[in-house]
Image (cartoon, rainbow, N blue to C red; front, side, top):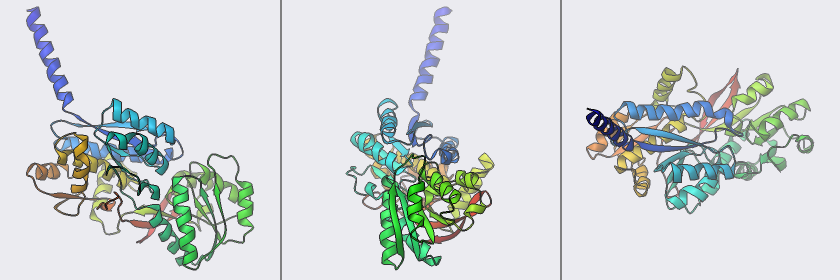
Length: 399
């Protein structure tokens, strides 16, 4: 009797192990702590929601999708370490993330590219990503900073602002947008009265601000993260009466900034950020699904792209038919080609059925219809955002 029970237990354990072995890990390289930590909670929810939709509607391959998160801590070396763990210890076949340009490039260069693991960033915008020698493994869902910098220049001139001061953070993100903006703004007839590159994590930027303010600029164009130098600069500029109008990019579209300085202080300011076409039905679909699940938060920055990226890497694994890393790149391109039956957020069961039937599918997400070029880049839309109470409100979409 004892032997029979033991055999029964061993058999049950073996079956459990076999079932678990069929689950597929999806890596998520997220900047959970560090300068953009305040962005992360709704983005973690977005990734979790995508995985939930996969598992509730048939699962991934012959099992479940398991999201494994690595925290970059917002730093280059810690991003490399987090990615290495996902690649070598967790053995993920594909990875969603990271979110900052610097952490994405560092993780890709040192960990994912050498391992042949596809990395799909929802938000990294540095132009340096375009020319990575990546064996077709690095992709992103937002346009390069070269594009956003040009659109921002048009946005500023359209607002009637003809003379600005500029300061941008000395990292991949800040340099990318800052230099492009300055060149495009000047070329279009604007005057850059003063410009400076600043370092992160300083306690005071008052001397730099005094120099910028003495230029007679109408506004300060500030390209940095609100959780780091950006927030400090805005606060110190207001305290010193040096600037009253700020123009920022997505790094400043952080509600922590509103909480810190108040909506009234930002009443004349505006911000650019990658966005979705205004008439995109998939955006409304995801907003409803997200708010049904979490009650609120669907309007937060980059929720759309984070859900889309997580859903897309799962689709790529399903299309590849296995967790073989060497097959994921081609599979990702195939589900974002603009050809085949359209799949939108939450439509995993439909996608799984069509893939099983051998039919082509194309994902049209909340952030738009993504078609990758030869470098893994996409075209996109840039929204103009203003402060509306305790939140940011999109008032225009530009291309």
